[in-house]
Length: 501
Image (cartoon, rainbow, N blue to C red; front, top):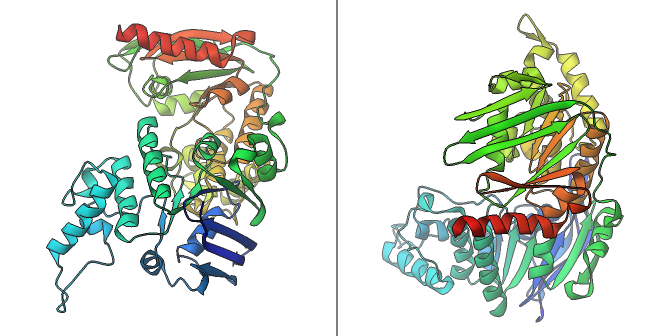
């Protein structure tokens, strides 16, 4: 690592009713990858938006390349060599790659006419330096998420960035695409660029970074060298306790069978799937990407149509239901993507909570607002949701608090079975632990719970039984001492090898 390129001293930023940053100091050196971690709402994104010119601090100063500086806005930050790559990519899909790279800074002649050849030439140079497999004239909307991310990174090359900030960069990437991103980050680091890396995925933090700074409640808890720390220490700094109580499994006290599935098949997606789940049981479903886990539970819930198969609800055979029928029976599905499938982002928490169950809150088509508000307050308290009020748009909340509202809207209908598809994806370790505790509590109260997770320690840590899925089929079932990472990996990898053979 080289000299300090950028540092902030005593940065404070307040919003109505909350202090997002409280006397924060932080620095970035050339040729390092510096992680910034903390729970949702800890202040990470606010600090990065201060550096990128999106927020003006109330107090403190920014020192860039040895001198105090003011960052007037995102374009000014980019011109200075500070680039923020958002989790939600800030590209215009109808424009070309070249037009996106230089958006807001297109080269023009003295009459304001775009210099297309110059724009294209400079963009091609930036793309070539990164080894991108597409050209400057490609329309951005035709590119994959990973390729669009490369367009964002090409801005760093085009503007000779000294500091590049990655905010949850792998949230929508496959493992192969993630490896390509890490290779690019290491290339930027080798050229002396200072990298800030924000992620909730602690394995990535320990894989790619040199230092880790922890924020909690808007304050710096400390900075440590990655090679000289471990997950327990970082977790303790983030949430005030170690991982000893991170995974919580409910006592194994099972009641009657709630759901049984037999011979469920969908051509080209999954085949001959069968399983059951009982009152008070947490059934885990694990598999690699493309295994068919989400498709199976969506079919059970009625989002997808099966070609064949039988469903039994509380001991009696039923026709494959529609989503409305599933809800009326007492089934709930928390989908994989909370933003696209689980919430109406511009609505408040009150409206999102009541949305699937309007009949519970209305009479002769008139909403009972006091009842709706009472339910909102009940689950805001029960789930410790941080929001300014019932009508604050959920788009303004952290990922963990958004996920809690998705849970709230199903819990308020008193379900008998709740299906949780990737319930902790994209949220911090503190919020994850709270959701693990909630899963155990639901099972303890007699609910049947199905948990789908791509995180093997999570699915093993919260479940009583685990089903391994591969290539659209259930290939193994484990419980008790047989629930180990080795057995799960062996089950899914051997089946893939056999299928390939």
